Length: 136
Image 1 (cartoon, rainbow, N blue to C red):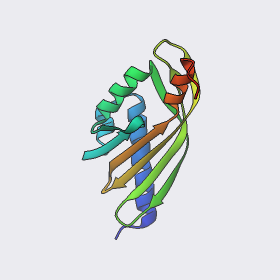
Image 2 (spheres, rainbow, N blue to C red):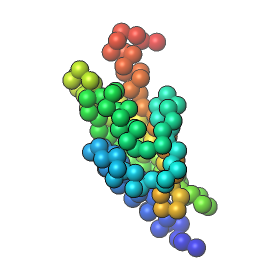
Image 3 (cartoon, helix red, strand yellow):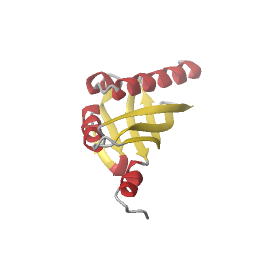
Image 4 (cartoon, one colour):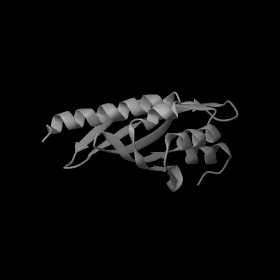
């Protein structure tokens, strides 16, 4: 049986390498860190199955976007490790207006050395509503 500390460090490294590739964006390299049957749930409950879909979604929502990673919280389990990556987004909206400080939380499930599930949450929808004068 593998040492839980080694599995935790490995899961954190896999997620970090995935995030670096996804921010380039290089969806094909990002996919190498994911299982073939990965389950991706993006903001708004959007279901996706490959990083090229998330890159395509982001290309419609932002002119460009990057993550300012604040921390990763890692929780080892029996057959999987959960990695929460927390920080803020910065970049430009499609019209070129810059933004920063947009909170995000990404949850990754790592099993067998691959990301098998990802959930993505951020404040972009709230910020888009505010930009259009719709403030709940």
